[in-house]
Image 1 (cartoon, helix red, strand yellow):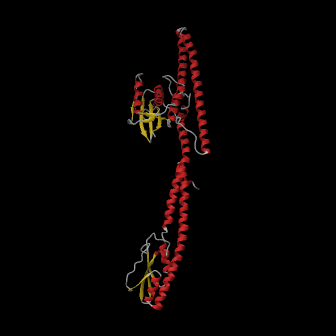
Image 2 (image 1 turned 90 degrees about the horizontal axis):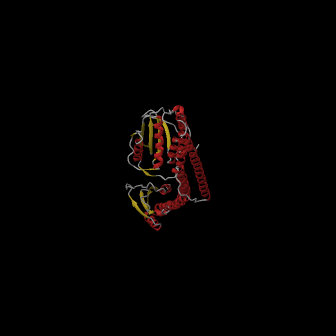
Length: 434
């Protein structure tokens, strides 16, 4: 039943905690303002106004019994000024909009039948017109006699001290939430392949969560290093028997040697890709730095041109630097270009900025893939030979997974789609630029 409220709630923890802090303070001030100020000041105003109304009633009785002169003496003794006016003299009835106690004053004074009109021009005086027989009398007395002085001061005190203690609470709240935001930043940075300095601090529960994060990060890093060492060690150990095989094959006749040499070259290619995969684990620890993505793509095109691989580019992203691990991004693009060259004849790199993302797409004119195979081909050691030709050699299925790991270490994604430019496969690196 409260789902509609969630759309209006703040998304960040700091603002939610601030709302929890501010809402009771504001709500309490409203209750005090309505219950105390209205009830209390209204009651005080009623009592004071009825006292003055009794004095006005006494003055009207003196006017009827003893005349206007005696009534003026009584009014003067009560702290009022009284004057006789003509019946056609104008009398303005004024009350400021924010003068709430003025409503009570007018209501109580006009309850006397002899009082015709009540004027409340300011906070200092009250004017009342009395009808006695055929004469009108105007009375003027101090506003303090019918309502409490400066009732707004309580509201001012409420607002001032409420704001003062709320600001103090904000500072305390920020200090309590800072360890949580630091933990979130450290976890997010680790998800992007960066190890930022983090020391557990704050409340006991936050310290426990921070220490658990550090232990988890250490275990993950240790596991990655062990996997890299095992993979690198096995790959290096296999180089020696492969070298002996090459020497042994060189002694065989040509017709027997050639097919076996092809197998040895395939094994050597597998080892090289395993070693590349092992090197990638160390590359993810390199911090991101300001990189000109346009120059990076241009350098890649020049490098591939030296081995007679022609690449065209479309789109423009300007010369604004982006926070990138330049060596890793270059390697990811190399893998995508090698994959496109293996299965197609034309290669196109598309550069564009879209929705705070830097998008670098590699298009080819090869046979492409079915949509159902996009997720599968991004898994390590996956080769979809039936869907892609093998005229230009094959790998072990690590090119796309390595590119995927690299872009994810930047907080982005690697997406595959059908190319709208060359009608083959389109592999896109989508990297957030903020």
